[in-house]
Structures are given as C-alpha cells and as structure tokens.
Image 1: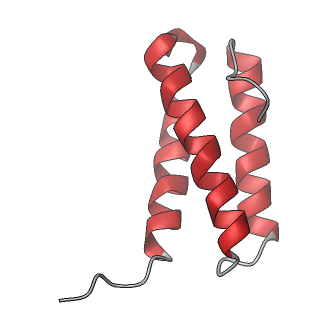
Image 2 (image 1 turned 180 degrees about the vertical axis):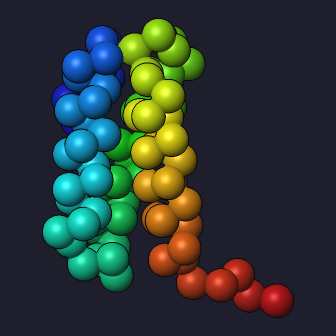
Length: 78
C-alpha cells in the first residue's frame, strides 16, 4: 500500500484487497503474512487519523483479518 487510504471508498478497497490476498494465498507464506500485517499497521494509523473513513463493516472485517493472521502464528514457547 503506497499511502494510507483517506476516504471510505479507499478504505473499502484496501480491506477488499486484503481479504482477497488472504483468501487466495497460502496462510503459511511468511511473505504474504508480513505484507498483510504491514497493511494492517497502515490501516490502523489511518483509522487513528480519520475514523470517519472507516465504516463499521470495514472495522469488523479488519478485526477478523487481524484475528485470522494471529491464528496462524505458532504457539508461544512456554
């Protein structure tokens, strides 16, 4: 993602792209996971800067994507 999305249309497009990448990709692919996590970091910053650009549906979708990425993490050593 070149720059953070500034409006609702751009946010929705970024969320859709992220959903598609994860759906089409290999969940064990470290490069895919790193890319998606980077996009989430950018979107979190955009949310803090302009919450009005994020619909409730976009926020919920991003929470689900974040959870999905965490599920694929190996368990922490004990």
